[in-house]
Image 1 (cartoon, rainbow, N blue to C red):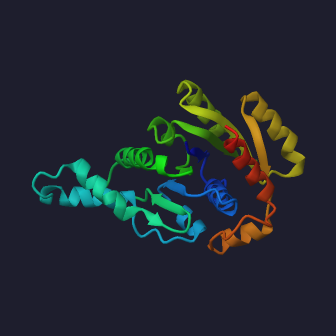
Image 2 (cartoon, one colour):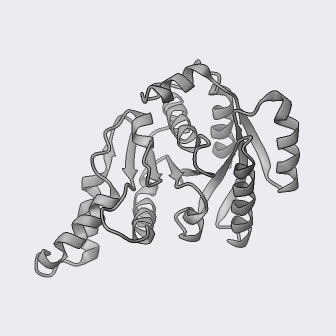
Length: 251
């Protein structure tokens, strides 16, 4: 049975970077194959992994809307979606990526989220690990994009809004009744003078702190230069990221 990790939190706090670091650490540890799912419409994960995300679930949706009247006789919408899935998987060494992307048409992302959920349910049994980079905020929970995962990592920074978002995520998870096996907080780039204050806030929220990811100048430069993360070994973030992997591996 494969393991699954979902990464959540407000936008702009390093959620996608942490997702990419987990995936790269799993590769470094030879914990493959990995199914990576970028469920964020902003779709940054491919760049961080050094992949070309030319295809997406959003594009598949647009193809369905455009071609539905031209489906071959007897071909259902479900069959078209199934065939399209194999066209949008981005394959690489040990990692396959599905990107949600953005549909060109108007409307919410409800259908895109339902497709992401279907694809992950169908494909995950074939992989040793599944890693979700969720969209910012709470919608991935209300739309059930994130459910039945081993670990939900809630990323927290010094930004007070990230703590507010963590509180809301924890409340929704509690209401879901065990669909997520374990919820952890992961702090990102907290200054030493603020560590105790953040830790106290997390205790108030009854969110277990799994690890603290430090500021890493080399990593920051990679992200700033919009280049891929080649490896986690040797980076300052290696040990806390490995702590995440080890915690989920023991479940």
